[in-house]
Image 1 (cartoon, rainbow, N blue to C red):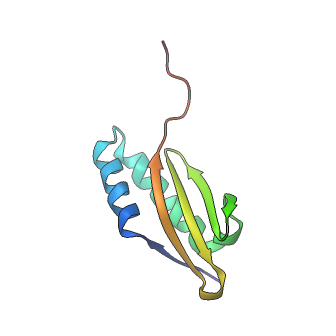
Image 2: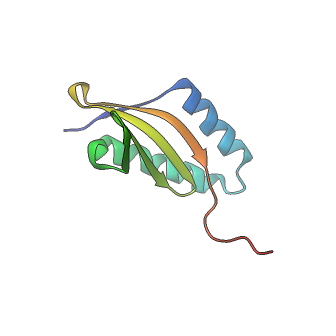
Length: 90
């Protein structure tokens, strides 16, 4: 069974800010889409458990914290942030 994925207002605003500031907006769009798809299909097994029903997962260049409400088959994306992969040269 599928889950309904809902982003909190704060998470939506943060994602919009990340997208606006991104050098590669396509990678942000692609990562957000991948996160949505994975959470829609298998939210209860994605990422790592944190506390209660809250989990964390990554789809570079994004990370998300989300809560799975199994009884409602609903996922709430609580927070999103950007991160860089690889090493920077000094």
